[in-house]
Amino acid sequence: MRDLDKIQILLERLSPKPLPPEFREKILSTAYQKQRNIQVIIHVLQKALFICGVLGVMALVFDTVITNSENKHLAAMMDGSQTSEVLIEKDLQEIAAELFEIEYDKNLNQWLIRHYKTEKKSAKLESYQNIIEILKEQTNEK
Amino acid sequence: MHLEKIFDSIGEKLFNYLTIKLCSPLDAEDVLQEVFCRLARYRVRFRFIQNPSAYVFRVARNEAIRFLKNRKRNPERYHSVEKLSEVIQDNLIGLENEALNQTAKALTQIPEEQREVIVLKFFEDLTFKEIASVCGISINTTTSRFRYGMKKLRILLEGQHEGSG
Image (cartoon, rainbow over all chains, first blue to last red; front, side):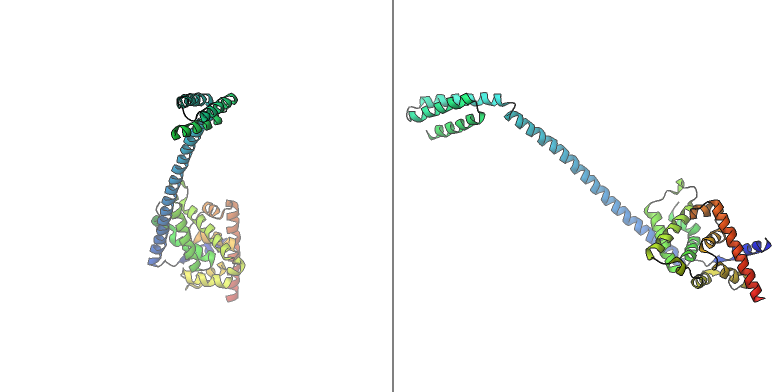
């Protein structure tokens, strides 16, 4: 036991050599330099994250707006077809009335009217639109 | 706690511990640098840490183990008695005294685990609780490693005395 105490005293007397004076500065300056570098990287990453977030929100907003607009368009084409049909029919009637008033090229007028009536029976919206285009072209030519 | 304060309080002890652990002052400097970079990088909040000095020693120990693994060095070959003896001779003062010199030499001949506990206890002034925390072992294991290490030191020193006598 006494020997162990003696060894302990000997071990306690052993001490490390002091560090050179520039050692402390070297270690700390490198550590702070790395800390600054990391801060810059973190700052850049935060900005990038923020920009990505903003872009993501914008994409979501635009997507919603575009989807709504598409839905409205589709509704106008599909569900709201009656409204469009009424409008087209009104146009057709006006153009047809104008055509009746034109005296020359009666054959064409008659064909157009026949065609309009045939298409109207089948109640195809696209056909109405085609007729309107044909009639408009014809009216312009006259 | 700022890095300056940490360095002023335990920087020298850390370097000494790492030098003996890695058997190289140059490697110890690299590892110590990495320890402080790590502490700076993670902005460790020391007010939430119960024992900052034990914590920093733990970080240093982990860093030293990582360093050795990265270098793929064989610890047995790396911790050769000759190399360790040379490092201890270079880094400890008071070895002109024959008894101290023999003690330092005997220290190089005990197993690394036991030497680590003795070094942390006597050179770095850590308590058994702190040593247990640094090495990630129980206090009982720490004390038994210390006891076995001291016994081996005694045997080695007695042998040296008998040899010289």
